[in-house]
Image (cartoon, rainbow, N blue to C red):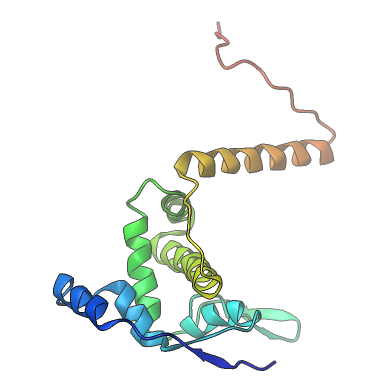
Length: 175
């Protein structure tokens, strides 16, 4: 696998001046751009990007057993920027925010931040490499898809146990 760096076109002087004036202490997006420097165009680097950031589990397998599946300890400004962006996204009514909140209740805050930052980093890399825009489907779309997944898993589980799920109306009154 060859990873040939492709130089990022320089930011125009006027744009940089406006960004510095608007954010004198810096900005998450500017930190990410400064930290990355060059971007790789290989398809395989999409997965390696989150490994480089230290946002994905590093499975240490020996003798067929998983000894450790924690994320690596990496001091990386871009990873920290993705983590900060994740916390901010968790307070929004977006699909990423809903994903973060669901994981936070199930796994706890630190693991949810890392998992959502990993998802955000993959999304960022694909958009940056392919040059597109992100259209957030919204929280309603995410919740609807999540409910469909739960229902599908329940139906599969019932079928393996020899049962059949029957839908009932939600306005049923119990006596």
